Image (cartoon, rainbow, N blue to C red; front, side, top):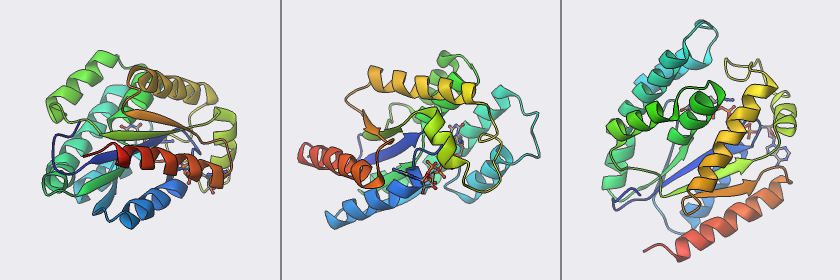
Length: 212
Ligand code: Z5A
């Protein structure tokens, strides 16, 4: 829980899950409810974080170690928390973030095989007890997701991974959702965009009804 006047909502999912397509919808829906919401993303969200994002996603450092990758994710996150997320939440703004620490558990923990406990230690060190108030996990089969994503431009360093990597990422996300059902709500992202947005709307409606 964020324990601040504002609420912290994150959106997660594997390859081709449709985060970009749905985040605009979520933002618009919240604004229509009179909520002051800022949109941000990880890795990134600050000038320093966006430079770290370029290092992480580009192919210049294809030999990057798994530990370096994890620490860079958290370095960008530390700056993001300090400069954007915490100030906004403390001012009562809602923060809508495209990926957060669940992605580190899913990609670096599940995908790369870094020990869960090491990620938990970083989470505790850098976030204290800050966790998202609500996480929408856009879940779909890896095959369908990869097919959707293949229609985009040149694959980045993550998008170049094999199907087995994304299976492990998906399993890790589903493990988190199973362990934290109050916070993490699964959306069946394999449906049409309209149906996906219908599911998202009902999760948000339920959340808003039960908040405050
Ligand atoms: N990463 C990490 O490893 N550890 C961390 O801690 C963090 C991140 C924070 C960049 O993230 C990478 O960073 C990411 C994990 C890693 N790597 N990967 N892969 P990103 O979020 O910026 O990258 P992304 O996954 O590519 O996100 P995206 O751009 O939002 O893509 P998307 O979820 O696939 O969404 P999309 O572009 O909206 O949809 C893809 C296509 O499907 C597009 O053509 C849509 O029109 C289509 N689409 C969407 N929904 C539908 C439906 N319902 N039906 C049919 N077609 C659809």
